[in-house]
Length: 112
Length: 112
Image (tube, rainbow over all chains, first blue to last red; front, side, top):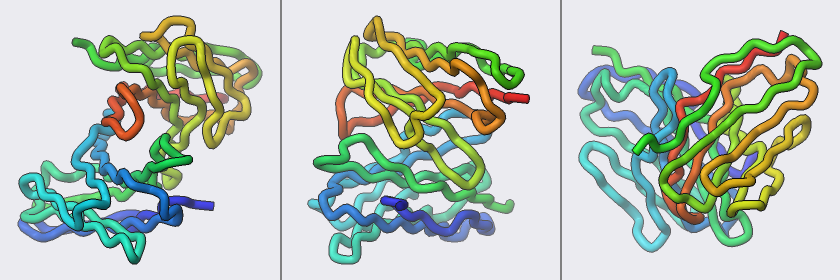
């Protein structure tokens, strides 16, 4: 049973466009939602994280939107750039499951 | 600071052979993790440790053993390698739960 479902599996966007990656979770106790970015041949690195006391968090071109009632959260990349081409993982953790559970990842390609 | 380092970077094994993957971190983190990454499957937790001398099973522990004799090191062992263990292995560490996980560069393992 997947505790964190991520979609789409792959995404192709033109330079300057908006990239949107969605995640849904099952465990209502989850209260920490990080996003990781992984470039080819590298390990993942934390991009941005949110806790459910806010509905949105923005860092530069990257925004997390959080919908607690729907048990969904999403990553928006504004003005997508070729350098954003990477695999993105969402994750979730909380009481009783404090080791983050990762989604299956989204491969993003931004065409110049 | 070197962060999280992994040894070796690449390895090819024959079925039935054994090997140990070494992870080292210099950030004085309490928590350490071993993940495997397979196409379309995301990051799956193999084993983790919440402190020196402790280990615990993750999502996919079968066929692997771990040890954490020193706080800075976390070893992953394969006693009798199988082709199903062909994967990229990532080690990660964090100061505590709900904290950023720092990932190593990965070990690409092929079992023939």
